[in-house]
Image 1 (cartoon, one colour):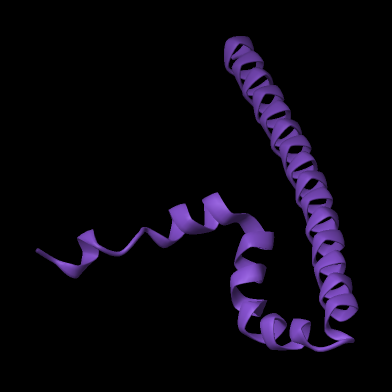
Image 2: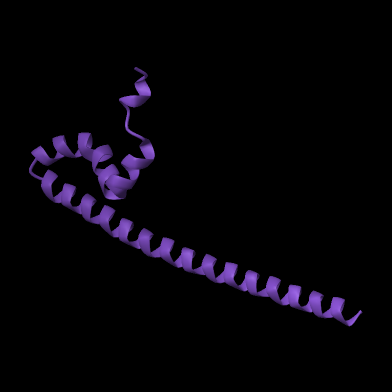
Length: 94
């Protein structure tokens, strides 16, 4: 069997875990030793809170960009339709 069958698809992993899950996996080796210390727990919580805030803000920005893009596409389609109508009217007048 090929190795590919044993490895999960990276897109599926990213979609399933999301940004917080991936950040947790990446930061886990750093956070575990830090969490053992007296200052570790507050530092770990602050880091996690910051990550959550950034993730939430990122979701909002992505949603806004998506809406803006949808508006631009709708305007472009409307302009194309208008141009086609004008072209049809000119062709019919000839």
